[in-house]
Image 1 (spheres, rainbow, N blue to C red):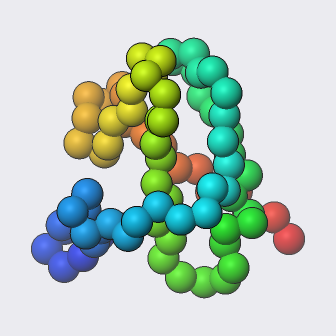
Image 2: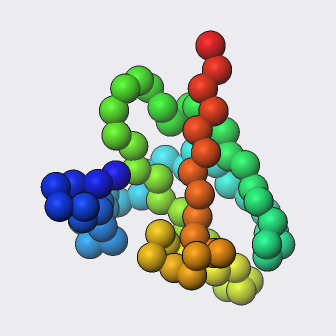
Length: 81
């Protein structure tokens, strides 16, 4: 999401606290794409913020849109009737 001037509308400091868990994974493998069904968290038109976290010290690292180009997260939206 972008605010006026191209700045992110939600930042680490302004993000709401994490709420209900919509989806979770077990062990992950580097360089692998994972899919999440977030339909239970989407109730209609609007802006949504998702919190991705790793409660384990297993070496899985995540980056933001400001990370290295090949490591940036991607959101792909699939709309079904």
